[in-house]
Length: 505
Image (tube, rainbow, N blue to C red; front, side, top):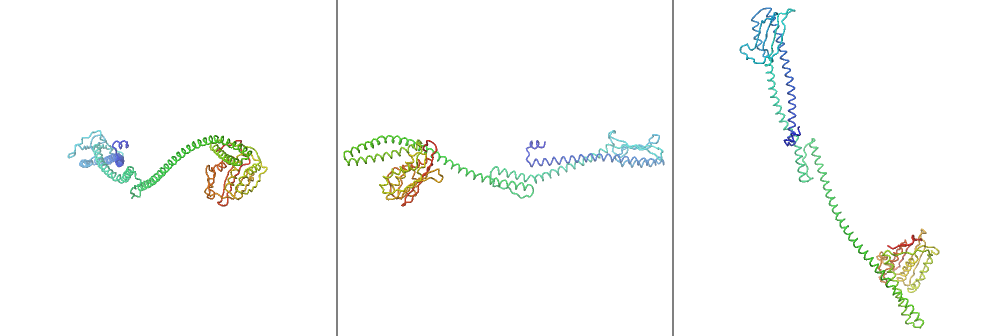
């Protein structure tokens, strides 16, 4: 009901508190007045009854004396005394025979206001007049209900004045206390409304109380401080997130560009490899014809004793062989990049393969007047790998050593690895050496590094093919060098290459 009234009149908390205190005060006053009225009414009725009984007892004694003495003036004096009791309406004294000896009625007495009350509202009290067991008569006393009701009504008027005073006092005290208690609540409400509108968590409510409201204000300030810190951290996280998002977008864009470039490069590389493969096949056919015809013509010139023509035919044949070697290298590289290079695995004697390769390199040793030192510790060791590719790697390393070394020593070392599952190959020379900056790109295709400041002829495919072949065979190749002191190329291969056919990439 209280909630309905508050909602009907749209009362705020101050009005609700005032209404609640007013209703509580009214209820307390009504309960107190009701209890007091009931108690006092009962007390008045009891007092009236006791008073009437006391008068009746006194009258019975007085009239006993009157009857025994027989003094009529005493009866008149008693009648005058009865007029001082406003609650007594009438008094009748009967003798033992029932005859009325004395009668008193208030409405028959002069100077007394007539009594127009309802006779049904009166109540009577009777007392016998006796002495030592002898009955002399009877006293009947009638109490006026109107007078008693008037006394009660006067008390009700008094209580009404008291209740009105209590209500006024309760309203005043309620107004004071609701202002005292709701003032901080309304101040907090206005403050939180301001915080909500301005969205400023840096505001603080003034806290000059030490009671529960002070604790509440302190809690609000602490909460605002935590929210301010959380807002600051959130802004920092948003900034970091924005920066990270921008970085991710840039990285994603860069990756997309790199992927696009890689796809383009892969497509171009595939097209290049296909072109080189086709061109290599197209070039090898006429080159083989040129080399074959030059050999036939050289035999005819030698038979005819024409040494001048034979020397020229030797040059033609050497140039053709060199060009054929370059074309073969390009074809091998294009197959590797296209992932179509296969290995032909076979079992062979590792020492014999190394010695056969060293025999092939003897003409190059003579051109540079170099001395060969070899340490072959794998004679009789059987390898299962691709002998053609191993020979090609070893021949390339030896030819490079001869190219960059003059009047020096070339040392070849081949020995089993420490785990007996690999073979270690090393080609070391005392040539010009390679700069440290060029060592990192030695095995890249079409890279021709300078040696001791001198540039040498070549396509830069030999070392790139060596790196690819070693990787395909399950090994690795490395190089180290000191300018002016020489270089060393070393690689290791497994004793038994797994699988029957391996491909590049």
